[in-house]
Image (cartoon, rainbow, N blue to C red; front, top):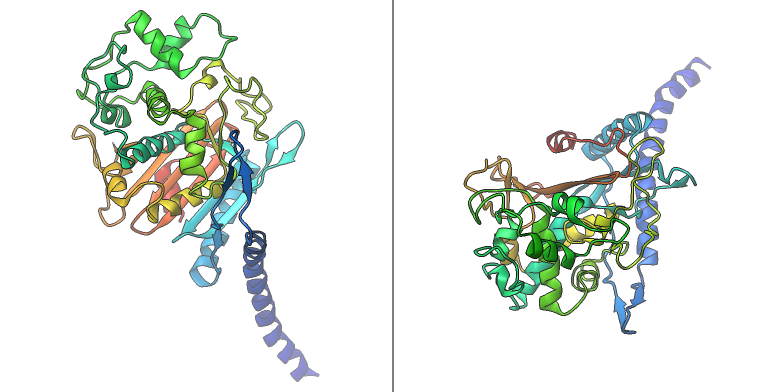
Length: 398
């Protein structure tokens, strides 16, 4: 009997540990199996012209969690589970070389209806929309339809600010005032959504004084990206929303992605609601009629698909991406610079960090790419509580 007891004490802990490990792996293999089965046939949609659009067969991949990766996943789960108890509401994804190491949805898409968030829930990206707008411009560059060194007045001749190029808009070196400030003062009826064209008309009519002369210095302004979205429409002959869907969302496999424009629909039907307080919904402001600087809705899985597409040379060439990921500001530090639509931290030349963050009407968003280590960090939040993160701290947790 004593020998039997000793045997049980010695073997059982090992068996339990092994069972826990197998369960941990299974939790990640089940979603992967589901995605693989459902991905046998690419989903199709039909656009306004009746043309069928097909997504490529690309889906999130999940890492086999053993050893250090299992410890990392447990550490991240513990950290964000703790934050969720303090009010964090959103989705989190950490991936390495395209494989998900940890992902989890916390809380609700709608606090009133108690609809739960999922990893496919699409959030307002706020300023994380800017890299996507920049990619739309660079797609047209690769098509040979524009140059980033073209004068903005080539496409908007009535704009009363000479000497500004598309590159100045992309890198925030135009010196233009932020439309969110002058539109708040001068837009005649806040019940009517502002359009990108209206931003231009206000500038033509009121001749606002620029903050700086073109290329004088870096000055982050949402006006730059509102103008870029308008230029995309002028050059492509398509609505900005349709062009981005056709040339970026579909080729990159971003199935849940869309652009909300209040001019197209007075009601935002996206199920993820932004909250500025514990229960207070964010206003669907008249400024939601302007796109390019914001307005893109994506899920965490969508952004991972975009991240991986960039490594594969989609939706633009590697040469164009290299230019986009090059610091454009001698007056900024190497750890806090800006390229063509992306924030850049090149503190470690062997592990360049290309990222963007955003905030708009209840949403906070983080899209971080460590290109040397090929690590991806995505955090999307739809409440203001416990949702402000330092990008360096997020990286240090991985």
